[in-house]
Length: 634
Image 1: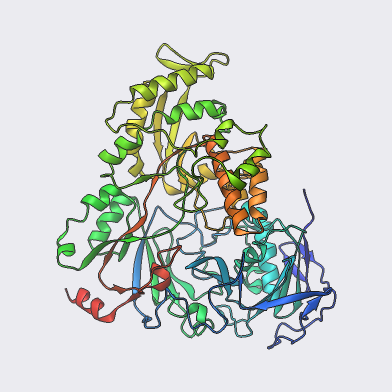
Image 2: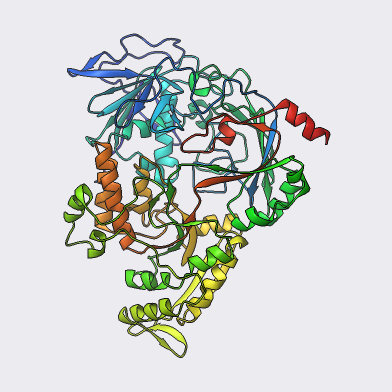
């Protein structure tokens, strides 16, 4: 349903050429942007007879882990030392410092370090968040609205105070001028208004989505006074004013960018920031491709490398520096959810519109041989859109999961009620004759036959040709054997490897047959699922509905998942969605790892505990002066 989003302000805000007339919220009092304190009665203890909760934190389905007087997150260290310079790699190039629009390729870190959020997530507690720019979170029991009282001491990097109208402005500019997914992400927000100079309230549309207050809490706060003087819709290499703990400096367009920690930042003494963001400077150096990047790392040009390649992990670090202890190669087990990744079909193309065709083509990919031969047996096959978590479907559909699926009995395949999806498998010997026989039969039943050694549609006459669009040569050796098997099905294929900029542009325009990509997942899935799977996102440029999924059952399950009122209902709905997505055969699943694989020069220390849902390198590690001195001396 289309709505007119109301943005109600106590002040007049100009967004480009459009002026939003100032209004006062019911019961509000106009106040100067220079007010230094929040009136005690800005939002009363009851509104319309309903009690208002005031808290330092917000959980989606219950209590939060950390009390109001907590000293710091358990996965941080009070002994962390601030200082030093860390260098990190990025591939390709960049031509913009605005990560919030589709235009251009934004610099690494440009969305992470300089713009603070209203709240910050606890990395060992995925279903809650804690006030950051905000000082207090206010909400009624039914969560029909949420308000944030801001910290009076919060400042932008140019020293200007952060005020409620900055929050309203940020919301408005994201939803009106930002990348399209922002509008989808915040679609259930009806009205936004300032209550006073330090209090902002978001009213919702009547949805029962308990995650909405947390979604709003993740809003990054932009400086109204800066962006009113700059065009938000255009790429720019001018360092913007931010609200986070770092500022941009030493910008070498397309080659490197450095972030410098702001000393005596307003957030330094907060419990939610204790032991975090310890590096004084963070530099991203850009490399043409992964091969060049790896050689630069071994030459000591940057400090830390997360290894996704099994071949690299097994063979690239036979290096004297490892033997001498200067270079550390270590796996760190994790319990992070792994989303679905693999060869993703663009079902907008007629040749991939039939699920039977997609299912048949999946039979031509030999994961077991690939894993043993190319990956040294390092990976686990991914079978679920919520892999490595309780959200993944298991066994036969039963209990609440089956009850949900029964509501769509006439709209889904019988497969969703049976055993949970398992990707096609082989014996790993490289002989796919059985799989390919089955694939030919399925293709023939779908109207495709081999004529003159080429697979053609018996009615339209279309010849099956496939282009694999890649952003790195790394995957070429994976695609190569797959191409050979597809050739035996009469399918001509080609690999097109392009640079990062071309790849981004083509993916955002859905200009591809098959890409290699991953949908990252969360232990508390929410509004991002619309951007992944919904019909509304299928043709929205820049969305992550890479496959072009248009399925009313998926749409309905996504909405049910978003508004689930209990953890049990959330898990059950996610498992039902997992089954329906898997039955669509939109992707040929790849693999995942249950550990972080790290290589780094031995100048770092890290906390005793690793976060549950991240590694925490930038967030919680620090440089040890003694180790750094030894490494520098040698």
